[in-house]
Image (cartoon, rainbow, N blue to C red; front, side):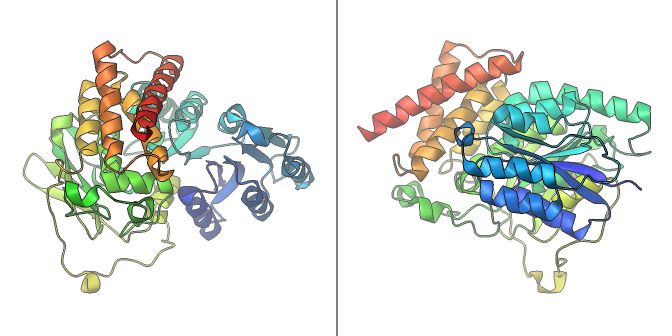
Length: 420
């Protein structure tokens, strides 16, 4: 069987580095042909040397004249051509366009989109437009642009079935979620009739502040908010997890991925993070996906589907797991979950504005420019302003970029007002 050729966008982040570890474990089945980073040139060069990657991109345009870019250009030209790629030119580019271009390379089969923030939407769109498989770890692609992405994924699924590239049974696999929660739901639904699903249960660890009151959270510092109890993640997603915004984004994602109404998607706190999500059926049966808290499991399944390969992680030992706890989320204290659900239910351009405001607010909090509870306040103020002006039906990437820019400008002004 030919190796699956992968481009990893965001290769130096948490998901990107764990994707490379999965490839190390299964080098007989997987091959890295493209790598993109935002700014981490030194790590990019080391990864390119290790995996012999001849297509590289750096998203930060300000680094165009960095001497290490010249080193990267020379490196990709010097690497030996992989078998079957004779005559394929090596490439190195700087800027967001160069990152997107990696997703469109003819020699790429699967794109792992592990970019952070709304910047990942264009890459997801380009991936599916080019007929590639999208292994998606970028939440904002669906939160902001789900109305554009899902019809594209359906078109690629149809093409995969027509060409014989899709599995004989089950989903065609054009869009494979890498989130542990959505990967869990995806697997619980395999072989099931979607019309017999009554509810999706999206699990949450509760974050580092589970059980805290609003008064407890007034003086929270970035260091405290970054200390997640069970998962090792990047800074932005760690803050989102602590505010439960991350779970709100996942509810919107689940709505798009599984064509499920919002009133059939529930969040439940499961502090041990052993149950990654559940699916409830009309007869009262519930299927749960359990596993070790290691993102390499959902990453590997997204790359191996429809097969299952030997796990690169220690399996869950039920004899030592202990008890499993469940609780309703505290939406009064952690208001971001309710704000995100409201944005999803209203739909249109409101989720894009909500997401833009959250990115600005999280960055301002990490820079110690606003308080922890100001994150939700900033998001709510920006959403209220957009709803007052009129939410639009999603029509294009260009429209979403404009709405995103407006949301960022409004949220930035709000944050500056908190500092004065």
